Image (cartoon, rainbow, N blue to C red; front, top):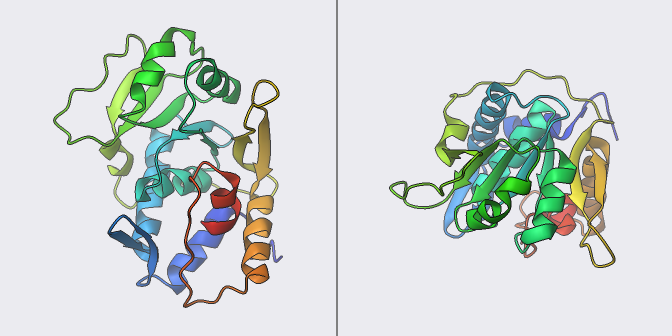
Length: 231
């Protein structure tokens, strides 16, 4: 692996966006986005996260269904050097409380349908400050959080074509993924940019992926299969 060429997952994606700007990067539920468009959206997302005080090494929790917007948050955080914290969409109560508190995330992106689970444990969330709400028709009032600041998802791409301008290195943490919690509280596994790149590159070689192939992702984006192999 040429770390002089690919210092981080953000670098890898930016180079892919330049090489394949007009080509489709992802299809999801009848929607598609090109590499070039996705690069713009992730830059905007990273810049907005930075404007909200998220910095290199800060955790950004994500509790979304599989959707294109998940990618904006994921790689926007990567470009900023922030840490993506994918959250199992089935979590609620003490399971959800543990992951959000243990990760140290001050900002969380959550689907509106899942937001009531946060509301139910709001008083026990010791570090979370801001919730970015995804989904809905835009006319629905946000859940009435008592302490947390709730913002609409479209804030994420309000800073047009900005760039966080952060130098992220291979050993820095790209994601903290939590174990299933079957034998006790979920453990956070720190996964650096180098690991993400190596796993993806090795997986592509093992199944002999080529440029014209379309790779189907059946796993939830919060799962390691999607995080390291198919996305």
